Length: 103
Image 1 (cartoon, rainbow, N blue to C red):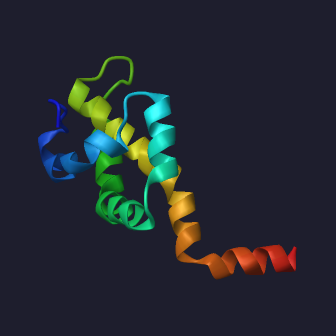
Image 2 (spheres, one colour; image 1 turned 30 degrees about the vertical axis):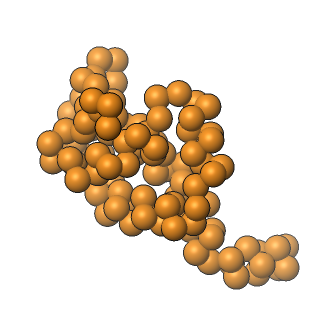
């Protein structure tokens, strides 16, 4: 995992750090483009149930100066937010058809 970690209460999510919490925009874009539906679903299923806890935890910090493990948690949450719409859309393609057809 190349030394990257999360705050202790989120340690079970560390397996997602290398690929789902990239530190640069190009890696983030690449991950979003090449991930399989199964990979996206696994990430979504693991992180989404923890998002409120993550937000409560992050509310204690000023974003001007956060420890690296907290910055990693922020990146993980940001990636989830970027993925939610596409994951939900993939889960319900009939919604797309009905929206397009009714518009």
